[in-house]
Amino acid sequence: MFTAGARRAVLAIVLSLAAFAASSGLIYRRQVRLTLESERDRPAFSSIRAGLSALFRRAALRTPEERAIYPFFSKTLRGDAKHRTTMAYYLAGAAGVVMLFLISQRRGLSRLTPSNAALLAQPLIVGLVVLAGLRTLANVPASPGARWVFEATDTGRTGRYAAAVKKAVFFRWLVPLAALVFALHLALWGAAAAAAHAVFFLALSGLGLEAFFLRYRKVPFACTHVPGKFRFHVWFVPLVLAFFVSMSAATALERWLLVSPARFAGFLAAVLIAWAVLAARNRRFYRGASLVFEEEPEPVMLTLTDRS
Image 1: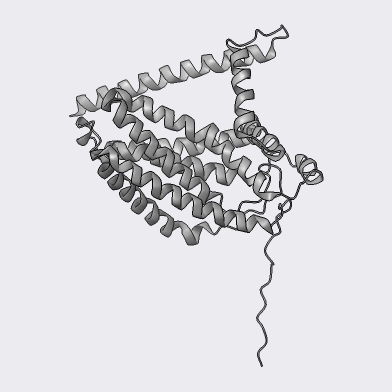
Image 2: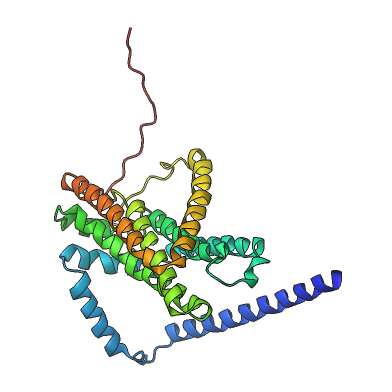
């Protein structure tokens, strides 16, 4: 038993050193490219990428507010070191939860089939953590000076600003995750089951995106933020319970759907109805709501009404 444990420990150390060496080489190469004063070569297929980007902007970003917020959200999250590092922490936490699921279900991993609840839950866990991380980081200012630009050019159509944030999260994060889910399960389950699994993940993630950004009316990374408004110590236990209940219900539902792909039509219709209800509530809210550029702290003292 000790010999087997020692072998696993040696293997883990070797893999850790190999990962460290590979990442160090990539980081060193990137830093050298940034510090060189020579002219950099254009990336391969840059013209094709530019054409696809222009086509996407014309098709998905139809309003000036969306064309302003979408790149600001994506480039700020990618360019700010603090936000990028914090998002890496969220992804590391998601990877840790996935590993715990894998370890707890290690005996069942020999059945790499859609009946394995641990495999079905992994994408949902990652998607939920990504949504929670992006929703939290969107309130933390990265470029406070940009607030004055958006405040001076505020069009009063708050719903379009919120729609741009949701589109940035959906197309820049959820759609690539769904493509990765499809690619990882393609060899295990075949094209039909892998596509159904990816569609299930994307549908629930899109519904969660609408719920996470419900009544969101700020310019991400550019507005002031008052920390501590969300009482985490109060909501910790309910959130943990809701997490496990929702994961169990989602995996049970997906196992039932994968038995017969024809059932996906009803599921997608139900998700579409739920999304339409949330979107309608958002539209009614945004009609009389304006953008919040400076978040107000809660009053220090609470007073009681004198009823004597």
